[in-house]
Amino acid sequence: MSQSLRIRRRIRCLVFYIRSIGDLHRQILHQQHPMGYNPRNMDMKQLQKMMKKNWKIYHRLMKYHNLLIIQNDAWAALIEGNPEEEEKHKRYVESNGNYMEVLGDCLRTIRHCRRIYEATVREIIRRCPDSMLPLCLDH
Image (cartoon, rainbow, N blue to C red; front, top):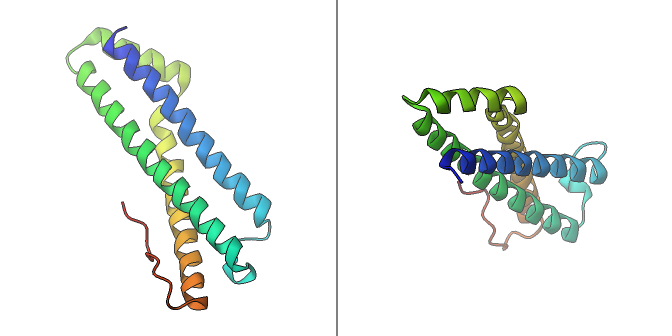
């Protein structure tokens, strides 16, 4: 299997993962909070659950976002000075769409998860001042 084919397969999988996780995030939010997210209306167990879900989604999206950028850079290195690879890239984008466009949605979802996580943690700290939770997510 050529290196180009491996990169294309990885990119296809990463785009699928990013879209799936983004859809899952929107679905969870819409089901649990159809009128908008308000941590003050939640009990402590719900807050902890929401905090954990957003932490997981945030870190998965960051991981896949970074991997997609790495794969794109690897493909760009293959394409450089290679007209055959450039043609493969062009055909791939024509048939599958521009895979880098998914990064815009991914970054919006990452920021949204971060805001929800931070609002949830602030509410938990407000209710239990002695809780030792990180207020913001690491990169």
